[in-house]
Image (cartoon, rainbow, N blue to C red):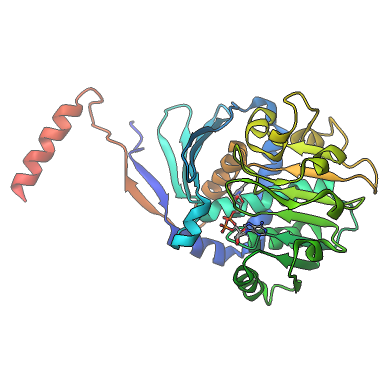
Length: 351
Ligand code: NAD
């Protein structure tokens, strides 16, 4: 018998927020991190390509596809640092999961909020494997849309207790302090990046500026630190001074993409970097000693979105936080698409 595959579950922004509140933000991130870890451990079997980017003066629009041979997923995402000044998000996204067997979509979802969860989960996975085990203090530089998610992920998964916050816009830091009050984290607002980084074990930079910015200079980074550099994610958009890169053990998601988009775009194309998934599988060691500086040059890779969509699909089996969309034209006789349109005309005339 023919399966009804024409109606596709759709998770709206409203339903995503309700789902997250029902589960709890930290538990969502922890659960997505488990899916990311599972997928990183089976990294070689995925289709991989650097994301397809369309650049303009003000930003970038990207498509991020991948497949594990059973499911296929892609995300549409933009990055427009100037949007914030106009009251718009810097990053917005939606995504889709489809069956490789039929090619039919099985899930469509908002991904602006989901991207913040998966980006935080990815930073936490990197920190879990690369930071010193006794890390307790996070310097969070860039206190915009991603920031609270980053802080909560590192609290939940890596045992961070104190967050030192800095943003060039004090209003962003104040917003972050308000949103994280009651999280159990000790919060310290700082007036410079230098002050924020004092005593930090882990530093996450998530600033947005379409330029070669220098959020961290070499003298700010001490022995034993772990850095998640997640805001440098586009050609011409970096956050770290080149000298920091030269002192660090650098870990990336997918080198062909990170060499174009990450902070390592400042280095020669053959500069040695390590792949994070290989640390998870045990193929390469992570942190070598307590004095090493480790850098996760995160740009966001399609497999992380795929993991997040897999997580969401599994969650939908236990919740009503979605609607069904009449998304795929599916005539009873697959060759009679035209007849299906004509029959609708008949139905319209009888109404
Ligand atoms: P956002 O615009 O909401 O916030 C960015 C913040 O950075 C703002 O508050 C801004 O005032 C601050 N800022 C800019 N320049 C600064 C500087 N020199 N020093 C300190 N603060 C500074 O953006 P967002 O959604 O939070 O995203 C942050 C960055 O992360 C963006 O560059 C985005 O493209 C990137 N991002 C990366 C990933 C990934 O997977 N790696 C995922 C999502 C977003």
